[in-house]
Length: 464
Image 1 (spheres, rainbow, N blue to C red):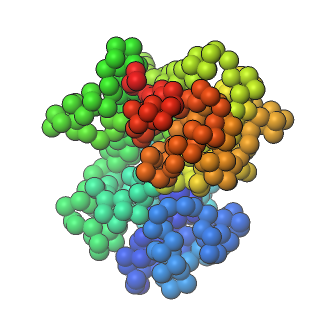
Image 2: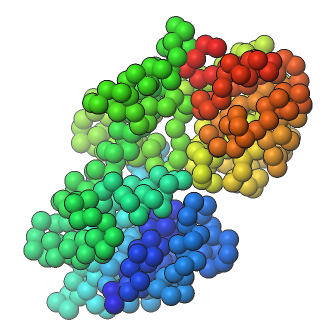
């Protein structure tokens, strides 16, 4: 039996290694974390992560060949393959603050492996990291190796989209495995290839060198975010000229050289990866003395921030240039549908701005807790404090509650339950102040039908 240990029970490590256990019943998978509350949640009926299909996979294998523990050292000792899947947040201070990844957790985990291991290990870099992070990991591990204990390092970046993570893991577009181009590196690489090809077609498991694998993750996210910022930039032109951004996106997407994916205009992208990875690429470019390259990628983030503020200013401008004491219903707080993740959500920027304008904000999201919303809105740098949030924010239990008495309704997350055939928009209209405004920040509503009901409709990329 092969033993796998995953250090880090977060959004990447938990689902990724749970799927390995689900697909390979003869492999023992132990996911470890120092956070006792998180491990307790993984061992309970209420998992710490909401992801469609995850519950079924975890409940099917937990206690059989899938285990969750805080005993990091024992899991390291027992493992043949060790995934390092810890957090790599953007640095808040010091060199590279606001752009560079903080690799403290990566280094701590690597040093722990080196100190505790009693036999040879294959160490797999699973966290999203800057290019050449594996070099520092390798230096630490080699400094602690001996003739009896050998460490080989691989890069195996994740390509998960929250909301579709389980299908991304069970039927991925590709799996990348990078190694040092040495006989030992190739042998270690083959061990991981043998795991993935148990359920993934061999042609989709791509082997490459260590540095290409690391950079490919950052490059993929940067290119996807670039497409979103590009269509969002065009949405501003559409609003000014009377063009329809959905029609423009469709026309461009039918070009086989471009394709239709990630050409949906919105209030802006969010999530744990896009902005962080692009800024990582910006910092890398600056460190490599490539200022023009750094400026190019920085513009993708600049456009995203512009889109969020442009949408927010449009709300205030449309509501007669003041939202003071007005009730604004925000439908959605997660950065996208089918996840409870709020990292870099456009809703945080929007809500913070409205609070500063002294609006009363009523929020409903089916998967984000009131505690999480208030934590996000009082984070340093957001611009609002606890007293302001308590005074101006109401967290509601339904869309209807949020909209009752509201001057405006704002679609911030594209949850299916906010679409026309799920919500009774006539009922919502009847409960709102008049004139009743709707701001569709996700292009999920039928503007003309809403106008027939009586709404004043404002839509990203359209001049309805």
